[in-house]
Length: 140
Image 1 (cartoon, rainbow, N blue to C red):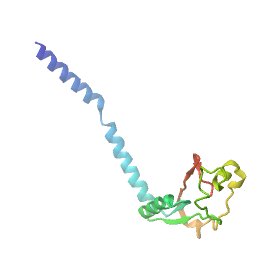
Image 2: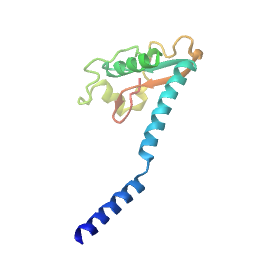
Image 3: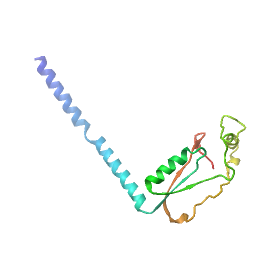
Image 4: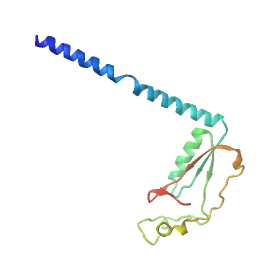
């Protein structure tokens, strides 16, 4: 008798788990994949795409170039007129350039070699990449 009751309870439990589980996880995954693929093709075929980035150490540049290659996009690097050196980027040194700029927001206006790409108006989609300094976007 115990075996019959156990079997019935197991079947009931299995039924309730499958009935309550549904397909929502798979549906969300499928629709997410579809929307990602469709937005990628819309971005690529719907007009020109540009990836604008600032990279102090090269990490953001590597990611920006991968994104641009994947999207068949152009790239535009924001380059400070006075490039940051390793010493400038030493956030552990309170006298370094980035520490000084972090402490005094008025110093964050960094002059760029060029701030707008040629033919800016031809781009329909623009992605912007930058490093994070002190929990915010890098200011150059």
